[in-house]
Each structure stands twice: as C-alpha cells, then as structure tokens.
Amino acid sequence: MLFIVEDNKLVFSPQEGQPISYQSTYTFYPINDTYPFSQKLQEELSQQKLLLTELSVPFVTLYAHYREGYVQIIKGINKKNDRYQCNRCGNTVLQKFGAFPCYTCKEMCFYCRVCIGMGRISMCTPLFVWSGPIYKKKERSAFLTWNGKLSEMQQKGAEAIKETIRRKGELLVWAVCGAGKTEMLFEGINYALSQGENVLIATPRADVVRELKPRIAQAFPYSSVIALYGGSEDKGKSGTITISTTHQMLRYEKAFDVVIVDEVDAFPFSYDKMLQQAVENVKKQSCATILLTATPNHQWQREIRRGRRDAFVLPARYHRREIPVPHMVWCGNWKKQLLKNELPWKLKRWLKERREKQVFLFVPSIEVIPKIVEIIKKEEKRTEGVHAEDHDREKKVLRFRNGETRILVTTTILERGVTVPNTDVAVLGAEEDIFTESALVQIGGRVGRSANYPNGDVTFFHFGRTREMVRARKQIVSLNEKARKMGLVE
Picture 1: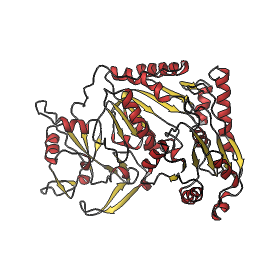
Picture 2: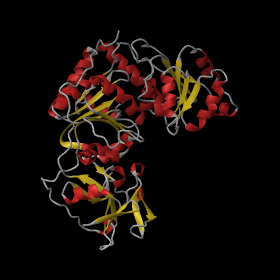
Picture 3: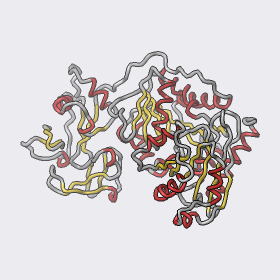
Picture 4: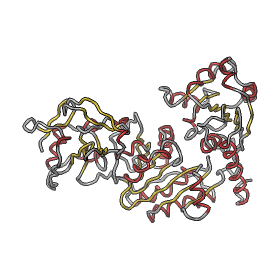
C-alpha cells in the first residue's frame, strides 16, 4: 500500500487512484526491531486510535513508521453488505450515520454522527494505531504525598478499593455526596502506581474533570496527571493518571490497568450504551474497575441488598453530621409569574433570608435563566446565570467559587462536581421531568459538605409534588437513619 495526502485526506497513490474505503484488505508490515522509532509518535499514539489531524508528527514520519511496522492504518468505517460500523466508537445503528458528497471517493460517503464531536470520521477516513512497544512514562518511586486523615469508615472504603485493585476485581462504592470519595481513592491509586500501572478516572462531565485534576495532581505531585475534555490543553499527551470525560475514552483501546468511573449514574453515561462499551474497550485484559456513585439506580440498590453486587456503602459524610433533608414548598404557577416579570413570593422571601450566604438556584431549562437573573438582579446585583452552552461557564463558576457572585442561577449541569463551602440550595420548578430522584439528591448534596459549614437549607419550590421529589427526600432520610444506626453521625 502506498499513500498520499490530498486535502487532508489519506488516499492511495495516483497509480492506484483509490481511497482507503475502496480497499478490502490491509497490508500490515512486520516490525523492524532495528528501526529508531519516534518516541514522540509512540507517546501520542500508544493504545489509541487517532485521525491524521490529531497527530503532530509530519506525514512522512508517519508513513515511514507504517512501512517499518510500528503504525497500522485501518478504515474509519467498515461496510459489510448494507451494515456499517464505526471503528472508533463502535456505532452500528444505521440511523446514526449520515452521508455527504465526498471529494475523495467522488460519491455519497457515510460518516458517523455519534462521535462527530471528536472530529468527523467517514468511510474515506483512516485511523492510525500504534503497533510497536507501548509508551511508559518514567516515574519517581514516591507517589502519594497527601497527608490528610481519613475517618474510620473512609479508611475501610480505601482498603476495599485498594484490595479490589490488587485482585483486579470490580467494586461499587456507594457514598453520599460529600463523603470524601476522591480521598478514599488515593491509597488504591498509589498502590497501582507502585506496580507500574496506568490509572483512568472517567466522569461524564467536563466540569468534574476540571475540578478533579488539581486535587489529584496535588496528591500525586511526582506523577504525570493529564485531563482530557473538549478544548483540553492535554490532548496528545500521556500520563500515568488520566482524568477524562467518558466521551474522550473513545480514542483509547486496552490502555488502562485501573478504570475508575466517577458519577457512574450520571447523564449521559448512564443512558448511553456506546459510552458504557467504551469503558470496556479501554480496559486491559486484566483490569480493576471501581464504580463511584452517590445515587445508584434501583436495580443496583436491590443487588447490594441481596448481596449480588460487590459494594462498599458509606451513608455519612466525613464530618459526622447528617445530610440536610429537603423541604418541599408549593409556590403556585411559577411559569405564569415569570411571564409577569415576577418570582413566586415564597422564593423571593427565601432569597432575602439568605443575604449572608451564597445560593445555588436550580431551574429546569436554559430558556428561563435570563428572565430569572434579570428579576433577581433588581435586589441582588451579584447574580449570574450559567448553563451547558454558556461560553463563559468556567469563568462564572470560578467567580462563584471565589465569592464574587452570591446567587448562581443554573441548570442541572452543576448538580455535580462543584463544591462551595457555605451555600444554600433552591430548586424552582422541582416538579419538572428533568429533576429526577438522582438529580434532586445530587442537588441537595451541594449543601453542608464542609466541616466548617456542615448545615444548610435545601428547598424544592414546586407546582405539585412528584414521585421523584418524594423518593429523593426519602433516600436522604433513609441514609441519615442508617448512618445513625451505624454510629457515624453525632
């Protein structure tokens, strides 16, 4: 096989005159052990499947490594009869492929719509795979420098995690919001690093990745820690500890010895079979799996109760205070009141009573945020709104963390991963479908997380109670009762 690049597309040489999609077979050259391969290419491509545009080395270098057996080239999309399969994300659903008039193959060319956010991959798009020695970054012998102290129950959780990593098993850690799940991981990660293993911490949301990186890097200052999400500066780098959104895992294959999935119940991971399969694809043949959640689904809860799932349950926070139980307050038809440029009077009173505290105000949709912010700003100038499509999202969250913003109006995008010590939380329109039991428990979990501020108020303002609201409150009450019986709260 001989290739050239035309308009950023890899095609066969002019003598053959055909794109890669026309080829039924591949040529895989044997590895030339005497060839001085590029360590930069080895680092970029090891255990990944990448597009040409994602590689920084010149094409002539890439092609030389292909001829010497260190790089393999595969089709981005396979076609067999009338069935298609994306070789990056594994999509096989015909409705999730699109077509466009392609310059390379001179016909309508199919592309994968599922993973298009990571760069378009079509039938004419090759994927590059490293087939030489796997890249391993040299590390110091000292790893964990965190000198904090775990509670007795946290220590038991840490030991369970470490033992699971040692025996390459699977463990579900069900720990309430604010229980200190991240700190419980440290001993297990330290053990894995001491064995020369690679660790992946995957989470559904970029906000959580950004939150975790400085904490993990501070605990393991002598290890290479990279964070991967849309727009990340760490793309193309490799680390012994990789913190990634679940979507970014699609690039990896059989790359990690330890896979930790944080917030395993969260959207989109909990609803997306492709992302769940991506977790399986990144695991080496012998791999430990740690699943973290504060809100396991009902099936998992049943499996735990019946002893059918290996799990560690921690129903209390490290500071030994109960989780604040939500109040439910009927506020009338709040949508009609917004049309009149008004907030429900009960919510207005609630906000006025908290002039000395910061407040999360969760709302059910992006559309209502500007109006609510406009109304609140008449009384409190330090108010901002934020949502998933907000280009200034990171800056706004940072201002809230720093205390510059007092009231932050947000969608469920901030139900997880953002911790501010002294806050109260309100949900407006808690009856809306977006506010599931899991979401409401997570939202309530923003309050009382700090040992210095272990109390706080959580209020669901609604236009009619829902089963999800009742279940969320019941779950928190049940966990508090369990913690009391175990002697974990004062």
